[in-house]
Image 1 (cartoon, protein in one colour):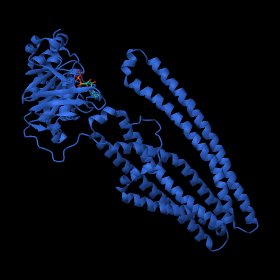
Image 2 (cartoon, rainbow, N blue to C red):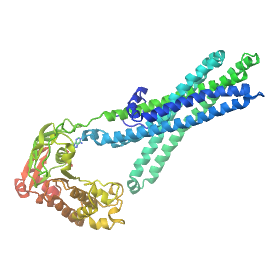
Image 3 (spheres, protein in one colour):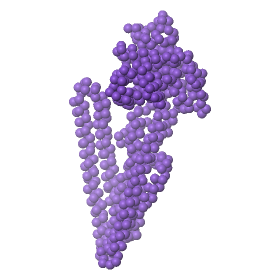
Image 4 (cartoon, rainbow, N blue to C red):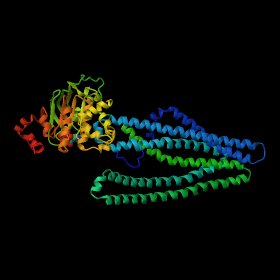
Length: 586
Ligand SMILES: Nc1ncnc2c1ncn2[C@@H]1O[C@H](COP(=O)(O)OP(=O)(O)OP(=O)(O)O)[C@@H](O)[C@H]1O
């Protein structure tokens, strides 16, 4: 996937066609917009005719005056109403289409497999959801509307110019492109400079995001001054680039005004001669100038939105690309049912697996393991041995290239992935705490749990003491990534969540970070509650856990190198004895 650029890249306008299915969902609004557009364009194009009436007949004494002014008034009211309706329908359409697009993309992203997330960065995905979708919103609500409206107006005013005065129209046809061309060229140049200017702003934003996100580290190193001057430099560079853009913009404005009004004056001058010679009425000349201005303005507007449309096409292209991604972990067409309740018998049968990003190195190789219902198996081994990969396979985040995994005798590829994962509770090494209340964090394990069930789970996880002590008890917000809790407390919240889920299989990645003796004991107690009566696979880092396991499996380079109890393995010597000496026994 492309890395996100602050200014989205361009793509052929045709890419925007992918928007059509989303617009089709709101055909009523779309049609209402087209009707309003037709009305407002008709009113715009009738305005010069109304003015001609006013000039030619409005100032003469006679019966016509009231009717003439009345006509002008009607056209103006119609224009006002149609413009308001057009704006309302198209803006609402933009909001709805983009909301649908975002919802659809988000739902799609949540379903993609681990392989996809290994190769994408979450920041990029969020930018697809925000920046690219935002671009499309402005395109539907404004650029698309302007493009269509201007096209209609350009064609309409061209026709009317010829109807009003074929001779002057021929002049205008030559004059308008000559006047508009330099403006369009200038606008292109401005676009380039403003891209550079936005890039500089983005550089400064990156600096600020990084420093503010790690403000403790910045302060701990006393690097506030350094960060301030880096940001100030980035800002100065942004201003210098912006100055170029502003200068170019000012020049183009001066040229545009001179050219456009110059052309209008020339045509007027030629028309004035016709009026004096009696070949043209004053009203017709006024009407002509108005059409020329409307037409010229619309050509300019078209040139301006073209760029916007190209950028939006780039955004749509990237969103479309994401929507085409498919998860390789899918439910079988005829899924098999797991027994109820799940007993928790796990079998890894000669499993070999390479991560998609690392096809050369096997994370698991010829891995065979049988875990009986209710048994606790500790996985130990050096870093990178493949312990976490065992969990990944069991949760079916990836499928093995060889071999199979059975749960209660059923190949997990034949089970619906969500039902498989319902049967498993995972307590990861670094607990994930969401920025919601403590109760909701625990309730993530079982969304329909009652308050009493949440409290009971917290009790078993030894979490009630510190949660009750928070200012609003269980209703207290835990802050971003659980910032208001200590490491050991976060672990106990995660354990309470797993307890509430009450799944027959438990995957436990024991935290390596050292806790003080008291939290350590609390966490151990909580874990004991959690492990009771469940099939448990635990990546063990502590002697206490290893000693409590029914069996210890020693892994190295994706293979099982030894199995047994602590004392059996110690007497065997080898990798386990070495690890035990380094990890548990000192
Ligand atoms: N998402 C991934 N993409 C590519 N390779 C990976 C990925 N995750 C793990 N690996 C590789 O697979 C191998 C096994 O990793 P795994 O995380 O299972 O080891 P581990 O025993 O759990 O290590 P640790 O104790 O350090 O967590 C390692 O060589 C690792 O580099």
